[in-house]
Image (tube, rainbow, N blue to C red; front, side):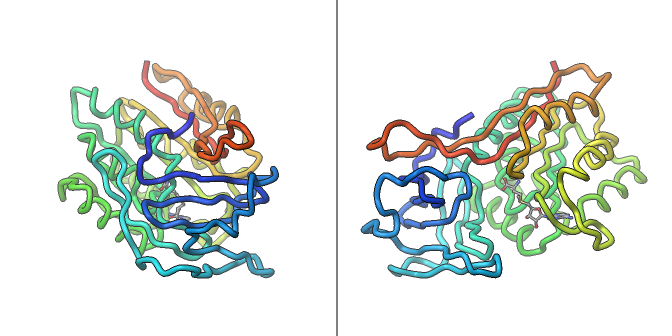
Length: 288
Ligand SMILES: C[S@@+](CC[C@H](N)C(=O)[O-])C[C@H]1O[C@@H](n2cnc3c(N)ncnc32)[C@H](O)[C@@H]1O
């Protein structure tokens, strides 16, 4: 599934372990572990390049500015607007490939005769929360990082999403879900995009492959009259069918079916032929 309809974003070229992107008028070069082929030209020498993210030997890294650009700016996708800011861990504050999922799940919300109550776990800067709230859903956005939840609020304001369209929660996702189960709170749809590695509610190490099935099973308990359940993963090596299987198993008995797909972004440079950059995968269970 390729996110094709961006005007303000494109991957100009990719290869040699990096991707050269345009975020509206700003050109960034970031590492990408999937771009293992030879780049069509020397990406670092691209004329308009504004900044390069250089990896450090300790696993971190930093941005090196080559040409001045604003500290933050906005990009538009359809009628939505998102803040972009180069941050630590080579992040920019948005995952453009997710537009595919915003589109599919947004349509489900628009077509529902009732207002859809969505839970967005590991919601980051709110790309999905804003897109779904703009499609008429009521979204509960959960992320452990206060700064990310604040970004979601800013993105919602910029996109003209009504104040009451999103409930903002700064919390550990598992802790929050356990509390919602206790309170008997239900949702019609869930999205989650857990990190590959991280910390659990009591500080224990989290590894997606070891914990995803248990978390997906737990989250299933808050679903009532489910319309969809979407799981995204950026974990290298996790096949889409694994996510599809997890969704089929945890949703067994509900009237619907699961599908899974790789997410990609088109590469503009065609000098070496047509290419797309893989950007993780998603599984989607939806009501029949
Ligand atoms: C891969 S990003 C999600 C991307 C997002 N779905 C999007 O499309 O823009 C992962 C997010 O999970 C959050 N996170 C990591 N561990 C968490 C935890 N235990 N509970 C809640 N949020 C967590 C991080 O702060 C980060 O914002």
